[in-house]
Length: 161
Image (tube, rainbow, N blue to C red):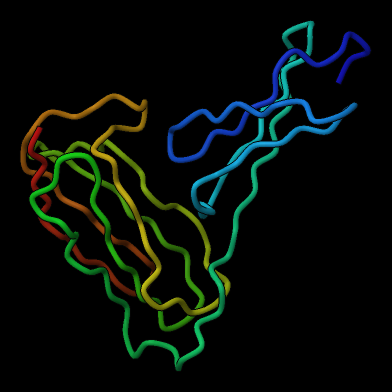
């Protein structure tokens, strides 16, 4: 950063801005309700220059055996209003892309686009009914598509505002 000092520090996670507060010289703090799979910390100096740190968190290793197959659960609840949850199983390390599409086949939201370095069981993925720009999508039918190099599936999702 520059010598002009820090103007603002905040976290972006799940399209939500969480302001960080100054605790002591060059130390900032914020409280998150839960640990997301990815978050970015933004530091803006008084010259409006921005530094960004993005951190990916691996899920805790499951205490059980790896799942036998790739799997994306049907979302619950379905239909939903404010948020819905999918559960993901990966039997092996893999790159995963999970995206939401409208009835026209247009991608409106990327929920996950990352490499998992280990198997996962019941990894929670939350969708709040917004698009990639944080705008609320209208009521309707959407499709959640899971793609890995070895597996693809689609789930029908109903959003009711």
